[in-house]
Length: 167
Image 1 (tube, rainbow, N blue to C red):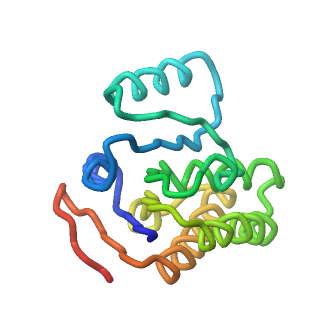
Image 2: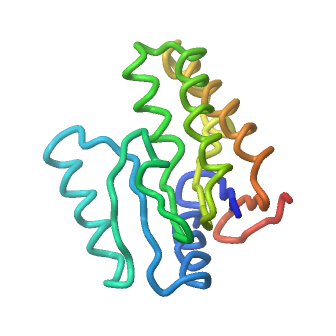
């Protein structure tokens, strides 16, 4: 089962996803896709880990998310935006190559027997990016969001802390 949760920044996506995971398991797994960019970012990640109680297993995985999911796991993948950033940076801002590789990795999730809750951002609904790199990333994010939503069993959009069912 794949749940797709999307929305804007601070829309309530993470808390909704975590509560959903806890409704399916007393021992869910949290997969953080953020790359550790510097010491301050490491502190932020550590603070997020400390916010979750001991029922959670936290795993950091930048790109190969399928490698850390086991049969019957209940996982929250947070988030597609940071995960895509890793592909985008590693492929020198090549949208086509990044999208191809991300789709290949995501499609592996479709064959797993697990409950997967994947969080993404609707960055194209906000301010128009000022740089070409930013605009290209917004396109990449939008195309990947469409791909995930198409294949998800359920899709929810969070707006001001309120979940709206998309499918």
